[in-house]
Image (tube, rainbow, N blue to C red):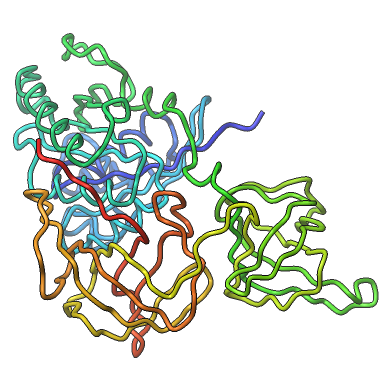
Length: 424
């Protein structure tokens, strides 16, 4: 029987111990090879350390090892007898917010670390706001380095209360947030329960990761397949074959299903769902397939095959929330490229409605968005786009803004309602 898969991300401020925590998870679940452990042990000895520096199992870039920080998103794959995991260890520095957005964009859960000596800091609030903006369904607050405050329950309780107030303001229900006291360096409550925290009766981090419900936000959404490529082999054995290849971004596709092709507005029925291994009776979210339709339609890359009973809105006017990632500020009137699904179109930025202050969780009226700013922006596109509200479909409610001359990504954007925050 195949094990289910949990995609989760780590985030936190600089030196909160994210990479050490990830290294501890990999080490204690025996998910690293003996030669990797030996290499880490040798590197640790060279640094004059008495115990292995488990962060070296994750921080693979030379610059990361030299500076003792995480720069890139480090993806790690590991498993236990109960579940498989894909982990994205994201950077803590403010200038690498773009990497945090990337790592968290597909996560079903995020582990947010704080240093028990410092508690919830500005970067904690920023990351929590980004995670809420990206609609990451579940949060874990790992109060790390609990050993450095002598396993003080009062310190832990105060941090947990502060974080609960923050997540409540960001709209998280209490049932989807958990707080765990850990020491990544020593191993307290990471994989095994710690005798040093008798006052904590909850699960270890690994136990929670193994048992938390896994529900892909897009699995139960209406069908969405951005067309990547039109397949027409024109061979003797397949002279009339025409299929539309793409990944199922949301929902499920099956033969006999009534669909629309957007933005063209063409209607048809799914005739077959093909893969390299043959036809499928159905294919769910995340599966790459080739769809054959009953009618000969003019479908091209950039089109989207959707459930005819629940289509997205086709529009050229988008109300969006963007996380600005570039050094050059965003101002009204900017002419950019917008990538939505497999379609790239020209776009003009309209009004900048407001900017979210991630420290106070209040909105202000900006004249521009600086790097790492999160703001609500109106955008007009040259071509009509079949766009969902991000709250309904993460895959088809998100987009990128691109610099036309360089092709660099300038912003990650979400269609629809802005992040709502309430006073604590």
